[in-house]
Each structure stands twice: as structure tokens, then as C-alpha cells.
Length: 208
Image (cartoon, rainbow, N blue to C red; front, side, top):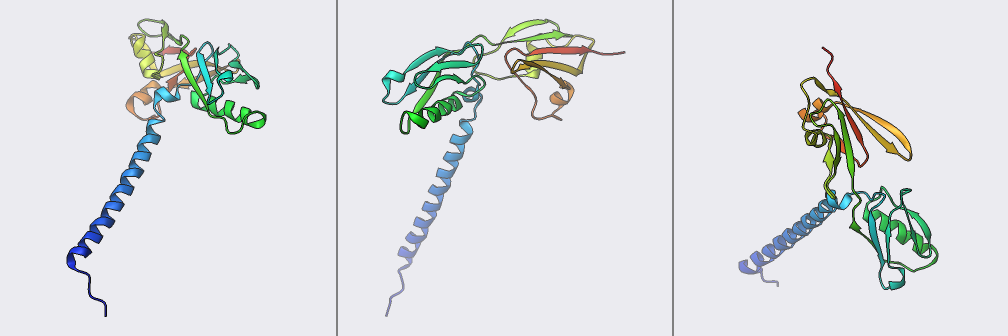
């Protein structure tokens, strides 16, 4: 014949189960926060020509490489030769190099890519702004369209915020983006528009 469990023991069992649930939720929240942090602007800043990077392969000192990214967006790396990494995040560039090394040369290589010096990044604002000209971008922070226009002193009296054009060179070809800064400022376009190095922004003129 089994005796019923004492009330105190039963409560301890319940408390233990509750604690396990709480810890599991806390771990899940920590993992979620870590994932969110990895998407911060600084970590996702794409590599650009003229950036200087260092590539390290764990326990492979002979492969340590410091290189400046060429205008073509490439570096030359031991064993695998020329690798195009411009436009990638450092994490994705490391993954690309890792995969190429793993094909024929090293078993499960551990690769890290670190930016040691950022190239000067500039954008240009023309048209109906107070201070047209070229402006340097921060090394790590993203610059939105509205921030870029603010850097140029904001709109003139006759500017048309609904008529913004951004010219961007992609793979040697010019692409024109037609944007409405009024919608962005009012929140109708929550994604906004992020400026890249080399962009030329032109603010149109109102037609009266």
C-alpha cells in the first residue's frame, strides 16, 4: 500500500518544475537577444574597396593575411587565390573563404575576418538642399536618406521632398532609385532607404 506524498514534498516538486520552465524561457530569450544583436548595423556593415582586412585561420599561422580590398572588390588569399568579398559582411566573407579552403585544403577550417581600417566612405547630395556637396559616412553606422539630407543642411524653400533620386553604381552599372522622402518621414514607408558609399542623391524642385 502506497502512502500519499507529504504536502511539502509535492510543493517542492511543483516548484522544481516551475523553475525548469523559467530557466528554459530565460535561455530562449537570451538566444533571441544574441541573434538580434548579431544583426546590429556595425556587424552587418558590408566590406568595400579600399577597406583593409585581416584574415585568420585557427592554428594555421602561415595563412594569416592582411590585405586591402581592390577596386574590383577582391583580395588574394593563400591556396585559393583571388576571392571577391566586397559587398559582404565580414562574417559572410569568412564563410566564403572557409568553404573554399574546406574544398581541397583544410579539414573544417575556422576563419575570421576583421576590418582593421575602413576606407573613406562618401555620399553626395545635390539639388535643392542648403549645402550641396560630398560628405563622409561614419565607419560603422548606417546613414538613412533623411539623415543624408539633414547632413546637407536640409531642404531649400523650393525643394520637393517627394521627388528624390538616388544614383547608385552596382557591378559597374548605374541604377536610379526614385524616392518619396515625404512618405519616409511620415512613416508610410517604414523601411526607409539606407545610403551606400558612392550614392549621389538629388533633391528635386517644386513646380508651382
